[in-house]
Length: 192
Ligand code: GAR
Image (cartoon, rainbow, N blue to C red):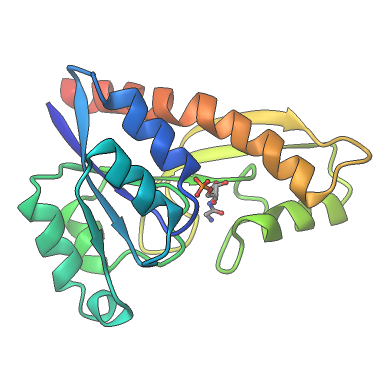
C-alpha cells in the first residue's frame, strides 16, 4: 500500500478528487494533507474525509526539517502537489526524488515558472490568443514547473473565454485526469 501525502494551498478541489479516488483503493491511500495556508479549503476537505492535516508556517519551510519530519512520521512515500504554491524544501525533494508530482494548469514548458499559477496562467494564455490549452502532470525538482513531464491533456480555448471560464474547463480536465495519472504512476513505481 503506497502512502500518499498531498500538499495544497488553496480550494483543494483536486485534493478532494484524489482523496476520494484512493479512499477504497487497495493500491494507495492518502495519509496526510499538508498546507502552507491555514484557511485552505483543502484542509476542510481533508478533515471531512478523515485525512490527517498539518499546516506549515513560513519558518517551517525556511528550515525544511518540520515538513520532512511530518511526512516521515506518516510513512508517506509519494507526494502530490495539488495547487501548492510554495517551492518544496530541498531536503524534501531529495528524500522523495522521482516520487513527487505536480499539476500545472497549462501545457508546459509554456506558461510556467515562478508566479505562474491559477488565474494568472489562464490570463496569459488568453492574452496570447492561444486556441488550445491544457494541463501538465510532471515530476518536481528544485525549480518551478521544470521536472520531467508524465502526462499532458489538452482542451480548446474558445474565442469568448474569460480566465474564469477557461479555469472551469481546466479544472474539469484536472479532476478527470489527475487521480488516474497518479494511479498509473504509482503502478509503474511499484514495478521498479
Ligand atoms: C489547479 O488548477 C492547479 O493546476 C493549479 O492551481 C489550481 C488549484 O486548484 N496549480 C498551479 O497553478 C501550480 N503552478 P484546486 O485548489 O481547486 O485544486
